[in-house]
Image 1 (cartoon, rainbow, N blue to C red):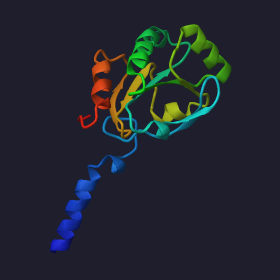
Image 2 (image 1 turned 120 degrees about the vertical axis):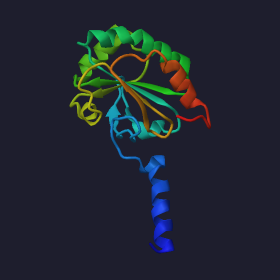
Image 3 (image 1 turned 90 degrees about the vertical axis):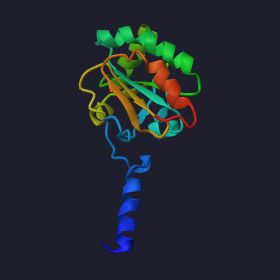
Image 4 (image 1 turned 30 degrees about the vertical axis):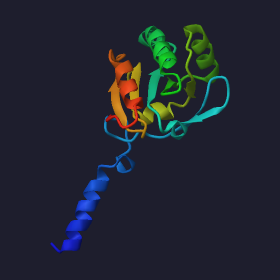
Length: 166
């Protein structure tokens, strides 16, 4: 193989390991699928606007008992993270009025996006709820779980530290 071909191949392999070229998908090591969605209480949120800090996505629905029991843990994470990480609820497939009423009744203290048509849930393959996905500051999925991770505070804190490996 000519030298320039070997250099090109080696360069391509190095670049393939970079986050910007990671394949898009909802699994660990993949770049998280982007979305723009309406927020409970008004406005819209773009996942891309959160780049640069860890993001915790919590997929939930009002009818899900396990989702309800997770809320105090998610509230605690959101409060403890402050501005160093983003915690975001993604309601899976319910209409805006239901999502707003459920968010208030459940005491959700973090932003919630309304995924009324389940487009985001399908992109993230959220077939069982609740589902927790943790993204690093570059938007790469670092954790995917259907249970609340016991060490999520340590994971999010570690991802929020500059220069720390994810």
